[in-house]
Length: 317
Image 1: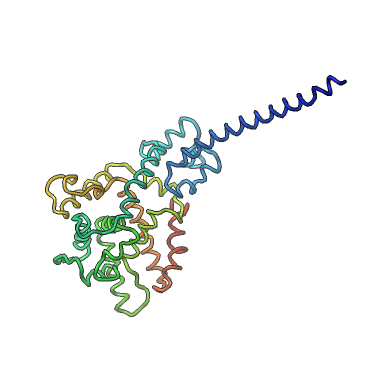
Image 2: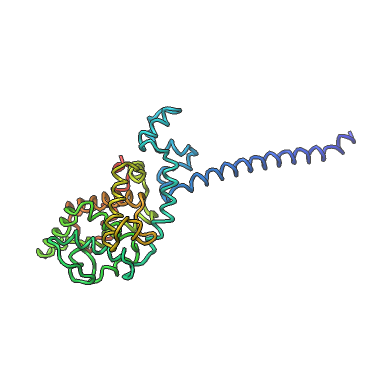
């Protein structure tokens, strides 16, 4: 009895040590799992990872980008490849996140510079698309207010979104000059009628592209991501043509890379973001014309009527 009594503390200590070892092993396992979890999560721009609740459910990255009816195993991979143009979605999102940090965010923080021929060239491109028949370019002019800038100098409206927002507005204008002029004509007619249903075209574009660049407010769903991950020939051609125009308007001769300053040439991610910006701006214009809100209601109207309806599973599908 004395021997058993004496040995019981040791048995207790051994048992406690065993429990500690098991708990520590569990901790290490969870930490390793969490490390992989964080590593996988880091491939997403900010709220993209929240949009699919991937990490909450501990599902594989690829499964979240397929319909719930998709089968598992090799068939899932085939469906994934078909949905995203034969590319691996995880790798595409890593590239997307890398470009977001190294290119888009850098440009968003880049102020308009009159000494940079690429920056001035963007204004020239916008001027030539917006004002038909063509008129001599004016760096400062009352005509910029017709395009929806707040004053004679369009550079003053670019403080929040930098050169990225100007590039996005130019991409929109060159992609669909008819819609741009429709917006200008709509606002011109509303102002002439004295109705309060006009909006500032350029300012709205800048706000929308800033929203997309920051990605802190609304979720991106599968349809948005599929668009951002497009890597087809049409998108590549748009990059080439956009950079050729940038080179031409910046005064270069030769290849686009020869004259466009560093970080001024577009990359594919910026063009796909431009597609998303185009669709969001189009959605805004459709909603605005249909509902005709008062201009003073803009800030409270745009969130429920535009953002929440665009950044939704319904629109994405």
